[in-house]
Image (tube, rainbow, N blue to C red; front, side, top):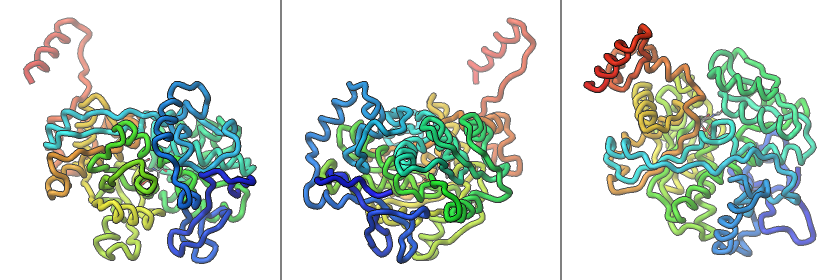
Length: 451
Ligand code: F0G
């Protein structure tokens, strides 16, 4: 697992750097932690200091690749390979044509919030329905290149679906550890269909991740959680592609959900690297939104000024972000501070409302993604986001990832113990059971027209 070595190393030859003590190494152990201080590693590109990539030719090359049929060019991740860890052979990548996700305007939500330029970068349009694919293509490729037969992850569902798909596609075996009863059936069904050995552990996500850390020390399995810095390199391309879609004019704000905090860290890393290289001339503010019941980062910043992690016992129906002990909290705090972003929390009702509003745009997303719109409303109320600023919400998962949530919402069963849930009534569209007669359908149509 060492960077490729040739007589003249490519500009994107890389090394591992500890985020706490700065120790640099050519290879990383299976826990992806610093051999000295045990903090997390990140991938860094030392050669960019000597010779920055030529940004104009990069932009032209990336655009030209859109017309190519080569597998590496069809991928919305590997299209940007100059900013990813160097591979000696482009033919060795495991790709499902991830990335190239749409940037949608959100006109109705823009009217509701008063922010005129509001967009959604929809990572739920990736091959397995979540942003995990853009990281998985890179990490799975490096796993196979390192000679591993087995890959493994702990997951709230999306990572496992994505890992299982990329492993299967790349001829690897995969082991999934998920919290029993706390992930959506859709995500579980994906892992099963892609052939993963799927273990439902009687614990939460944090318990699954802890066990995985012990497992990788004992067995020859390669971990594909976002602790793995190759994952974050792939996830960086969300931000690169977004800037390309905006003609390299950064928005004022990017808002992202926070769970284990890998994605916010990756997006922030991309923004900082793009600024250093000169691809963009200013930084958007990157803000992280958590569910109130899984608000470890919010509490860490408020109660310890970001010095000590405050772990929580997570509880939220947005199961993707039901995480109490986020692994990448230090990386996330670094990018929040470097970009001047905010960190907020939103309630279950606010999440449900925002999800229904995104659905009503004809776009839809899973509950964890909807925290972004709910958080935006709070940031506007606080004056942190101004009406004349441009905002991009990162929608991390597809609507179809959690149909139970959506059905419960529309039937009025989502928050049975909440006395305030009636504020959601105007957004509910429960299915209507009718006799199979023309009159019944016309009558329903007329009532709907009046409402
Ligand atoms: N949104 C969705 C849909 C997710 O699946 C996750 C995380 C997040 C947001 C949070 O991203 O962890 O990088 O801060 N899902 C992981 C999983 C933990 O196992 O699928 P994060």
